[in-house]
Length: 238
Image (tube, rainbow, N blue to C red; front, side):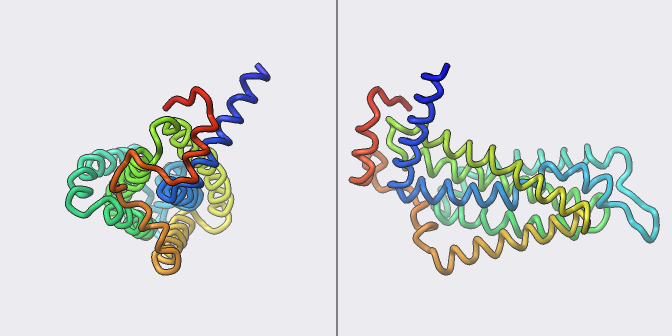
């Protein structure tokens, strides 16, 4: 058991070193970590938005017993539509432009979701959120698959999933605690505005992060610094 654990840690460390040497992989993992912390918690807060956020202190109106199901269904519809749109958009715009557009549209849609009036306005907004969010997830995942060398693709994708899966609950706990004090809709709106500001700042001052998201001219090639890292892992598999 201990030997297996050490081997897993070693493989993940090698994968991290390799990902750090490839700009496209490095950028995608950093971006998904930021999205997971600031943007993704909207998923876990959907019930709170439906039950508490849509309640009006002035009129006593609320989303109703079926509100959580309406919002979850809306997010699902958006995700399906977004998934169907990804390939044609990437073909028309190019990978970098498509992912950048999704990174800008997702937090913008979160702000809209945070301020939309009533159940049906909120449901319409979360359809857009769901579509943009799947564009971010799928787009960055594809960037890694195209840039990562085949021998280490599995480990680098594992890092991507780990960044998403471990940072998301941290963001959810933090936003949930803040929502208890200031309101869930305000937290959703501010988180969207904050994520949008971060993406805009990256676009203005760290442009190489976004430029690295373009499809590689030759997917079989990898940076010289990455070759040594891949070669250091005997029996590496994708």
